[in-house]
Length: 267
Image 1 (cartoon, one colour):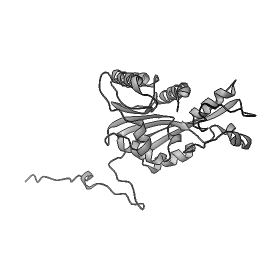
Image 2: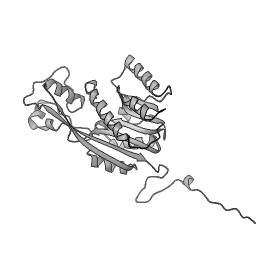
Image 3: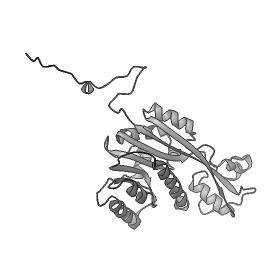
Image 4: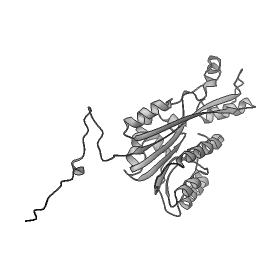
């Protein structure tokens, strides 16, 4: 997602934070994936005093801006150093470069729709979350950019389907399948209106609904004046992590989790 749509990241992150207001959670370590230059970390720091940020900066942040980014995250963490994760490495491997059971909260804004396999992402979140930790996320649903799906436009623009066009029911099922507990899903439609075709195309490229056209802005007949965004929100808990994943309807547990009760003869 490019800088031209940074305002949308901030807006969606703000709405996610409002939904966290009613959640009771003691957070010491939070992973922000992806992390971007916005106000969300200030709000998270106020919501969870003393939190330490583990950050995956957007790939577009580089050079001096990246150094400034690190300083801000360190300062927001009250001078407690958290891990910095390479977003480009994550995009290549799908692995979150953090130890097992290392964070209390994973906060992910507008990422899942760009992942080829969201289930693997959910497994990684499950792995890095501590027992009782929370995954909070937002992503774009399948009705996003539906105005561009007209046959005539598809011939004039390089329309790109979402990598993972999951609706909220798909995500709810996947969360349960990956052992998350008590998933809560929500959805809303946002409508972006445009006065110029160039602005709509720029945002469509930033949202990865249209392939990059380089420096060329095509003249497209009957281009719509608005874009619909289906924004899906959700959160789910990592509970019962000591239990193994059931196989063939049989649940297995680690023998180390079995405690032996002993009795002492009083005679």
